[in-house]
Image (tube, rainbow, N blue to C red; front, side, top):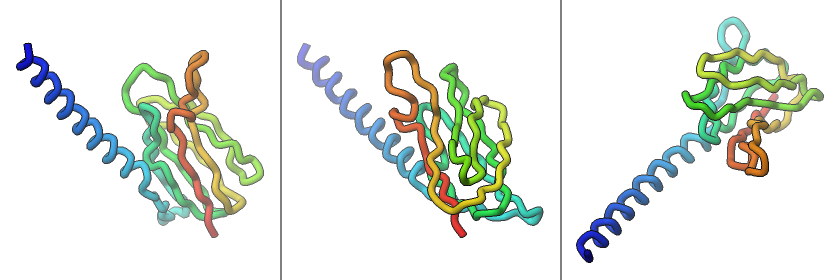
Length: 142
């Protein structure tokens, strides 16, 4: 019996280390800043992946008064997600459901500043997806 308990403890410990390592790597990926580069056609393009309560990249930097195309999609799975920014004063206002097939969101930011993007989904009395960490920042610079 003691042997099984030791084995269970070791397995749980290794599993915890693995989960911590993956979580740390995922967090590092999400914290990277993605600076959009303007393509020759004058459009800033960014691929955004959403999934189990995350967006990647989580921090996006774009230039003001330059068109932006976000190509958004979600990881395969049954949990519904979306991406929303509500900043009409800056020319940015959308709420788009995420699917595994990419969708393109087009806008031209007209005002510098930092604008949060997030998933608005929430199930009954549980935490919203945004409260679970499914949010990021769109930074518009000069």
